[in-house]
Image 1: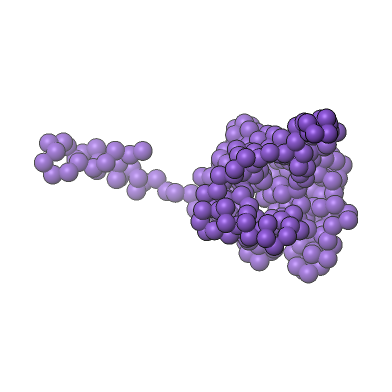
Image 2 (image 1 turned 120 degrees about the horizontal axis):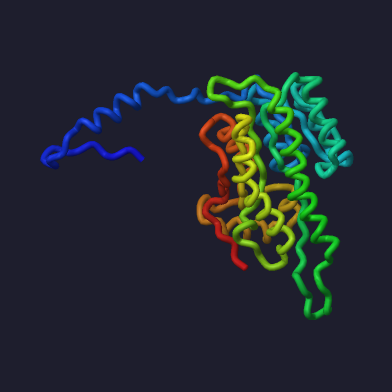
Length: 288
């Protein structure tokens, strides 16, 4: 942080302050980037946070390749968004599926600038159910870890290779990767051992991957959403959703997926955001 300029009567020279001013003027801030003309790939893009992100990319003049399961609404969503959106069925844990999606992005749109990881799953099971004398299923735990952590990493490692083919801009920038964690990474609730562990893993790998990819000019940022009006919550009774919304200090409501997508845009456009985890949660801290 630059030192404050001396005030009259401080008995201090203002030369350092003038030097800071002139040096600041001589340095040019890197131009903020624009989504227009960029190409992004979005996992879990057929619904919820992913769909909102795909829609925003297209609305802002970018092209989007949407990855989701074959059983999703991806095909219909892509048709509704027009020629700047492409759906490719994929399992994020499959190297072949993700490579195919990246190849389609290059074939149709010529490049890859953005990767947004929204695909994920959850289970709600206690570590040990004393009443039933039943431990948490190891298979379920491993499945959540595999999809949420390994699936995210699979997309990151392969997307980085595609972004590395881009010509850098004047700031040396070639691409940006945005991951999705959760406030559960920090405030895990009862029954969230698997989910919290998986989202904590995404938080934990954000900085080292940002450091890994820095020489390539690729940024890595993670968003940790709070309670959002996604299909998962939409399936809950109205009373439950109202109760959950009241737990958010301000604004006291569920987040809108469009607000997540707006933050993705801000991350892409601001070149100094890197290696960081951003909570998007209305100041909520989840209770046990």
